Length: 353
Image (tube, rainbow, N blue to C red; front, top):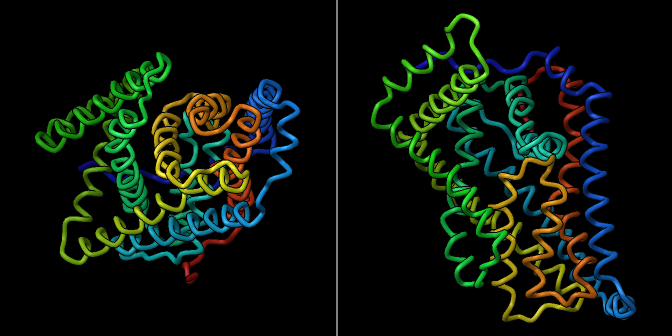
């Protein structure tokens, strides 16, 4: 296999977190989100909205806050468990901070891809070699999204989702997932071929954009296969099994926030609770591939389109804005504070719990 990836240097991370660059990304993220929210509210709010707001059940909204906190803690515990495979364990608090850092960088970068370099940097500063850190983060993502993409087609069929836009989005996802799956199968069957291609792409003199992209993709495939090796031994399988259970617990808490929000607005029928969870899962699957920072704009429009089957029009805008706050904004802005602290903090071993 190729050498392990190098984490970004302090200078590279500071460049990534330059106030001017952060401000530009944050402005774009907020601008798109605010415009989308204002348009949605303008199209849905009417005199019945005030009547609906008067029926708010604050204890259900408080339950949403609790579910958000539980999802962060459980996700932190999941990363903490996976880090033990690398023999450089992190505590739950440190792991949760690293996850929130990813939320923040996803909010200000296209396709939500900006989190991984900063997460690798943070994990390396706290004792995990970059190759193992990359493998742990990749396996964490695979556990969650394998479940999401495995269930999404069935849920879409059960909900009767058949709009042209959603079909186009699913076609887009199918192409990307199909190409990725084919590469993984090919890499498992012919690892030496992948290694030779990666070496060819990375050692070419004056490589073009395609060669640089190919080297990066093939290199990530190698790191993924290295990660699978980490989880193929006896004790590691136990940690992997626990991580699977924590993934299910995380999904249950994260996807249930939509149901508690609807209940808080006095709009949830008990029989519709599974549908709400299913809609949240579908949105998570689709929004991963949206090019805008944090999927802003598309997230609001997609949520409004899907939740229209469960939420009356006069409360739809209010609900979608609240859903977006808890499903993404809260984690992103909490992660912003963690990102700056991780850059400023001195390197040290993690002893959090």
